[in-house]
Amino acid sequence: MGASPETSGDGSHKTEEGAVYLRRKITLVRAISLTIGTIIGSGIFISPKGVLKNSGNVGLSLLIWVASGFLSMCGALSYADLGTSIKKSGGHYIYLLETLGPVPAFLRLWAEFVMIRPANIAVVCLAFGRYLIEPVFVPCNAPATVVKLISAIGIAILIALNCWSVSWSANLQTTFTVLKLVAIGLIIIPGLMALAEGKTENFQDAFDTSSLALDKIPLAFYSGMFAFGGWFYVTFVTEEIVNPERNIPITVITSLIVVTICYLLTNVSYYTILAPSEVLASEAVAMSFTDHTLPTISPVISILVAMSCFGALNGGIFASSRMLFAASREGHWPNLFSMIHIRRHTPLPALLLMMPLVFLMIGIGDLYGLLNFYSFSRWLFMGLVTFGLIIHRRKHPDLPRPFKVPLIIPMVFSTMCLFIVGMSLYSDPVNTGIGCLITLSGLPVYYLTIHSQQLPQRFRETFNLLTLKMQVLMEVIPQEIKTY
Image (cartoon, one colour):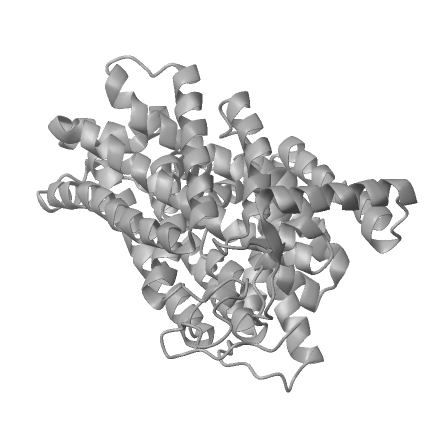
């Protein structure tokens, strides 16, 4: 690999303009838009029901929202520490590889692309399709087939856009971030106005313990932290961020403060207008809210929520493809997926790989039950990443760390993640057990194909020929300049 090219103050490259590599096009504004835009997706419009159901009362559910924001901030600060000292893109995967070794890194990669990423994208995509098409069928429910079709078309458009241009994807992300903040504002303002006028009956006996079940609280955290999921995406694209040592910490701190305040005020507004029983009975809490407060613009809110989901999908696709790109570059995935389009300078193969499983899961239908199913692996490995930061500090005490957090922060995040995961095995052993088994199914894959490389010679030759053919078809080559 060659030396890194010189960069100007705005991140544009002065030399090697014709070389194929991922450019630094993610400015601070784009990084914040990516982070806020991927955090605020369908979660705040879906998760309030899950948080309330498993927490048992309004008061505890609000505390769980605040605690989820606090825990997410601890995790985000820890990731910012890693992201400013380990300069590679790839997020969870690359940090596990550098701190705990190749086996946990590969298992995280395996879980990500077999289970976590397709299920997550499909959940948000189905929410997008439902909110977008629902106003057309009012007062009836939209047919499931139509929702699935709209969802599939939406994801195909986004992947095509990400394959076409990094700049277009980033600009689209900024636009949708603004739209989703408008949508949240249209929920917060009427709710707080009603609260100021004295509508407080739904907060009476807010901490009623009659329906409290302590063993369900981890599942409430799953729903809350699902809504905060996305704060880590900025570390997936470290090599494409302008001045990452400065911009990554600013991005995660700013984004999580904004999102936590928005989420807390949004839930206060929900509970001001809707009784707890109405929240639990609603399949679309945001729509139930606007039916009570702004019925004339309810279709507008529905479309804004759909656009919020669309923006979250765009950010998730953009960032997660970089994890696959980084893993292929490290030899943990077929080499084809570490290649870049020769003219568009986008990781086209890594983007296209996500489509088949996502389409399959959209076809299956309602995936909200998978929240606990894939959250097990997601939060287990995030806890291991921040535990790895502690190990990395001890192994490499002299490594330059432009942004260094106190070790108590990753300790708190790791402890809470592992505690919630452990409790979930007790609370929902079936779904979490299946998630665990799917994750561990990556072990034989790793030892057969990567560690021992015991594939037959004929298979390897055929695979290499197929890679070459696909490389020519997609017009992709390995990156020509080292960017870390």
